Amino acid sequence: MKENKLENLLWIIFASIGAIFVIIGLVISGRIFNYDNKVDTVGTITKISSYYNDNKHDRNYEVYVSYIVDGKKYESKLNSYSFNFYEGKEIDIYYDKDNPRKIGVKSLDLVFLIFPGIGLIFLIIGGTGILIKTNKKKLEKYLKENGELIYANYVETVLNTSYRVNGKYPYNIICEWNDTLDNKKYIFKSKNIWINPENLIEENNIEQFPVYINNNNKKKYVIDIDFLTENIVDLR
Image 1 (cartoon, helix red, strand yellow):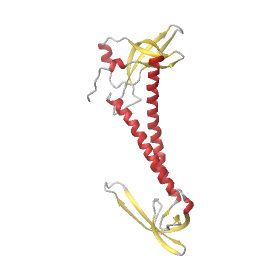
Image 2 (image 1 turned 90 degrees about the vertical axis):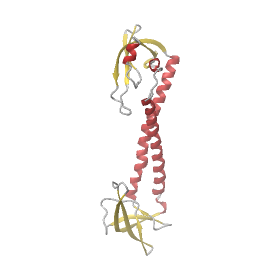
Image 3 (image 1 turned 180 degrees about the vertical axis):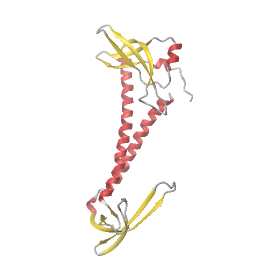
Image 4 (image 1 turned 60 degrees about the vertical axis):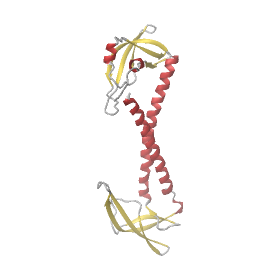
């Protein structure tokens, strides 16, 4: 199904974006947070100018600071901005021993941690999604090869409104099975299916679905619905 492919692609995109952000963030942070060669001093803001990007929405600021190094006065552009900056204000800065024109503010450097932070969130979300789908496929394959095959009665088809891809909700097939060994009724729910199977079920007079279960842990099961959709070609 198209939505299933899109779902897989979304997890991959999330993980890829996360990895890129983490790498960029670590590279930037590694360069900024190496304070061994940097000297603390006090500077005075001499000029603050602003401009808009081509889209006219993002406003950027350029902050120039003057400071003294070994009796020589320098004026350099700061690599960051804060809303409480104003011309004439004295601020704590640092400069590079080997290149005094390179300056920064330690407290504002922390902003660059946003990159690896956001990247890590994306990476966890995408990686978790990929891992869950991979584990589900492995479990399904294992159960079909090693699980006990039973036939559960079809109960209904429900819309899974807790999950959505490309603006669409998937469907789940609900089945029930009475185990004569423990006299308990078990309710099973299928994996997500991206078409409404009710017409197919009715047209083929399907009353039962094959279910593969792990007898040692009946929470591990899979309803085999592949036969229901294997002949459907999605040309959307």
